[in-house]
Image 1 (cartoon, rainbow, N blue to C red):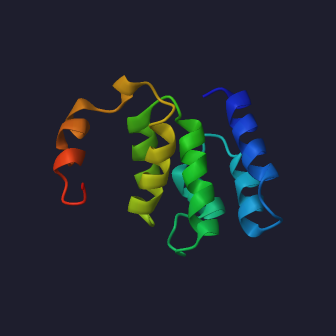
Image 2: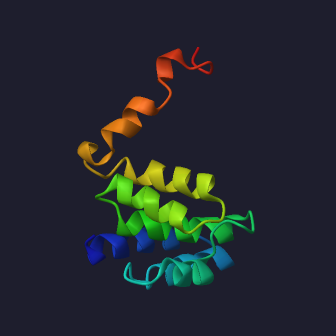
Amino acid sequence: MDAKVIEFTVSYIITHLPESDIKYKIKKAATLPVSYDIRTIVSVLGNGTGLTAQDTVPFALWCAAHHLDNFEEAIWTAVSGLGDRDTIAAIVGSIVVLYAPENTVPEEWTQRVEKFDTSMFYK
């Protein structure tokens, strides 16, 4: 992923946040390269085990920012951090699906997802 895209995205988010722990962790997330071991990333940013935004969102943004062009890789990176995997994967997937090319979502995944129009929640 282009470093300028990540820098712009993080800068945009940070300008809209009040001074807080989450703001500082998102700033830190922007400095951590994708080459770092996932355990190092989690030790710095958290992985959702604290069940708070400041323990979940920075890691989710880091995963998304470094894999905006590859949906599958973004999701696997998100769940590899362990912790609150379903929440983090949902955040990451929601961001990346809007940016990544359509063909990066594995066909098998799209076939296995619940169909919206037949869902019990569809009205």
